[in-house]
Length: 324
Image (cartoon, rainbow, N blue to C red; front, side, top):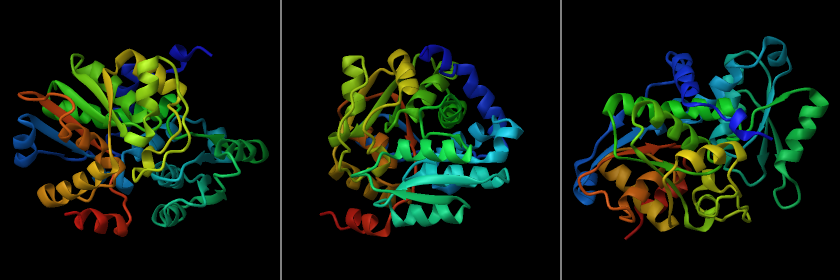
């Protein structure tokens, strides 16, 4: 497979942005004197936790479904996701008047499972210990003639996700660094393409959970590394490997990958609540926690942070607030 031929170009992000202009929300970019003081840098938080459904995923889902032909749309779409992509596909499909099926783990967040159903999707549960979600989805594609739209390994998904970073650059101008959470790689790949349009000298840094550093290992080795399902509070980044299409972009445009611990994510959640009055899910805290970790010297730099989502169970919020 020629991934370079499949992967979207920087211009695809511009096209997605034009389509999403009156569909996705243009989320705010916030600053924090406390964050600036702690890092001795100028930090800009792109708040995708305030996007439709509380996460950046709506961008890619909406754009990808829009690119389907009317004949294909009629049969509906299927995806596999236990998180925000599930809700995004469900809502985007509902807005287009087409059916959707989402394959979700039995252990998925009850909040996200209920939200996915409320958005109009049929939810098919699978056991991650005995079943493969991609195979379950493939069977649905075969039997029901639906079109698969995966969470990250898809050119239109990548282009759509990149519009969040594009809006950030449009508002802030050129940046020295952009920190992005990494799960399957769709958001960081799209963000890196967006930077090529408006801030080509910006260094793109991916941030993963410490126990789920498949992306970091893949980046360093130059080939995709697959790991066991990581046990991390950052459920949106508990993927086993990067998607091949995102990885082809990451190899070309990303400058580094770092990790943070679950404790650092809980502390970052509390920071967002205390200093910016924002509810951010653990996965959505990855990029910010990477900035605040001090693992990369940022003194005097202008730094963008994608705050990717805010869908979090109340128990996790309670955990972060109870930290001493």
